[in-house]
Length: 179
Image 1 (cartoon, rainbow, N blue to C red):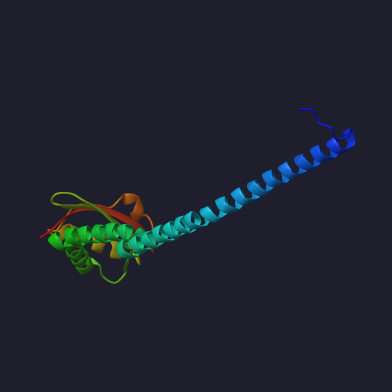
Image 2 (image 1 turned 30 degrees about the horizontal axis):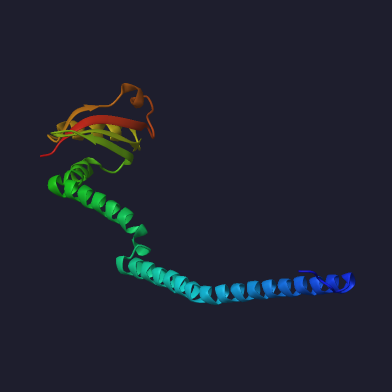
């Protein structure tokens, strides 16, 4: 087959053909992108709806289980459990109340007790009392009262604390046995 059209018209027709072919290609490409975009819209809404429902489900779980409020509850329960255990220990033996009562009966005017420390053992406690007496005689009478008591044993007062006659500081060590 022989083309009898002049060369210039052939080039013009070929150019028009390729322009139309390109136009159809880009038009089909635009339609495909548009249809793809339209087809993606429902899946976008479905995934958005799914994400929202998961967030609502998580919030409902946190609200039902109370995870937000329960962060400090376990710490509070542990502290409360420890306090109850300590109170049970003191309620069983009532050691501290008995010890303070026994010591309070021996402290008289002229004696100021500043510090009491004790470490408990099976039968009672090892006690250290620190304070200040008005006079050496007040301190000696206090120590004698402690030694005469059956509840206090091994009462020791260092001799070096008897050097000062007025306002002597003292540190008495002894054992306490609950009566």
